[in-house]
Image 1: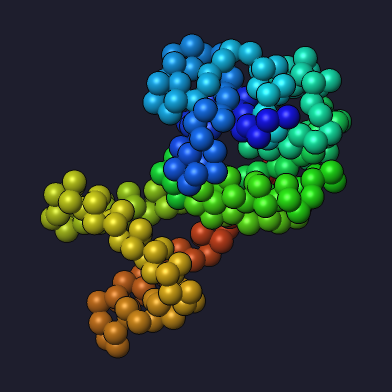
Image 2: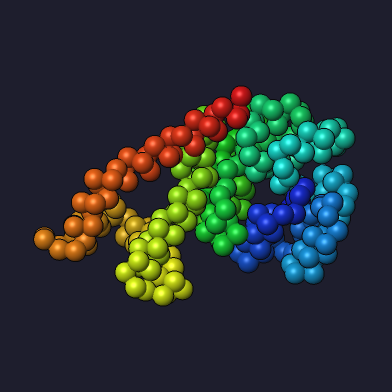
Length: 267
């Protein structure tokens, strides 16, 4: 089989992955094939990225060595049913379909090697936080291939499948927590007289800068926080308000609630 990367479904996240692997030289555009039922979407990715676009899912399965499943969860079974016998033992299927377990994927595609992946929305900005788990047939070489694909759009870690619910609660749902913080901080700036556009830009850049500092320095965020909190200063006064409001506990609770809901939906 040719070394080709295939996508069943060509939505925003699939497009981001295509951009990432092309930009990092993992695959040339001509080595990528994607199937999509929506014609304007097919035309969009073909023209913008130069990849092969088709409305035939079977063509993707037949021609690609790695197939990424990027369809809605409620459509997965009907998409895979006519394809089940086409998958090969040396073929790697990478699922980014939310909530579908490895066991369920292997039942639908008994011949293929399966890896289940949980990326997040910032994949579309090349800043994804991704975790993945291997099925029983997938080896270390398969894990390396998946890691390379998703590191082209951010960071990627291999975890046990039982931890993917925790990943959902943390990084899967996490962008929403960050957007809420950006919105609230911007509102605070507006409250104190800043124009809305400037307040929003400052809030977003502040979270971006803080996150980058943690990643670049490797320092514990608590230590970095203490460096900003001068004795008797403005920041420690603000921190007192956040601690009294229970912001830290609320964020921990949000991760837990999302993870528990993920477990519930996965049953």
